[in-house]
Amino acid sequence: MSAIEVHMFPCLSDNYGFLVHDPSSGETAAIDTPDADKIMAEAEAKGWTITQIWNTHWHPDHAGGNQKIKDATGCMIIGPAGEEEKIPGLDRAVCQDSLVNLGTHTARVLDVPGHTSGHIAFYMEDQATAFVGDTLFALGCGRLFEGTPAQMWESLSQIRALPDNTTIYCAHEYTAANARFALTIEPENPELQAYADRVTELRSRDEPTVPTTLRRELEANPFLRADDPALQTAMGHPGDAVETFAEIRRRKDNF
Ligand code: ZN
Ligand code: FE
Figure 1 (cartoon, helix red, strand yellow):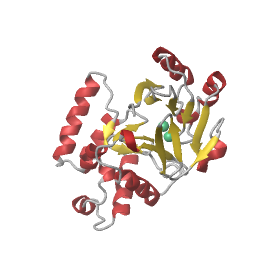
Figure 2: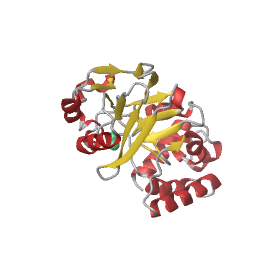
Figure 3: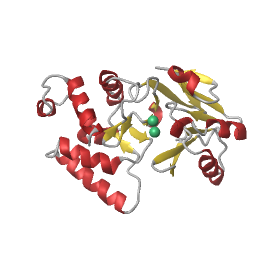
């Protein structure tokens, strides 16, 4: 089975667009639609035809380009069942464990509410790749616009349970600011320090910090580390991962 090709490019001010291409079938999925014109131009430059859109959640910087791309390509739009009314042009609503095919490849849907109430992620096990939208960021996580800390911790726990070597494609380039914040939470974490240095270097050359890997995030991302006893104690909630997560999220909101 041939590997998929992921083409990533900046969109809007700090989003990433992703085109996932299966060479054997010729199918191409756009993961979210921050900027229809940009995404279609990138597809054309690659010689790819967009056959599907996979939406992670309803926010306009993720689904705002749906209709324009669908009108131009006739592609099929797949998105979260929990946000069915809010996803323009939706053809197929999916939820936990729904399977979505791209040629011979399959993505499994994970329900990861918290940033929005119906947010989903797409996990391609045979490619060790996950598209997580605004749920998990490199050294960060999405703001809780529609969900509770307990929900988001549960969602992140589902992502945490994927294999360590999973490549994580998150939807925004927020990593430099996330690193500055993370260092206030775990200043002595050597993996975080090394990660932050790498981020500074990449961003100084205007290079992306996305994708990341789950292993790297487990070592350094404070939002994935709320079950760490030392961190729980430092946040004032020994033995309580949800309250520790909630406290870190509160601090980030006010950072
Ligand atoms: Zn969002
Ligand atoms: Fe977003």
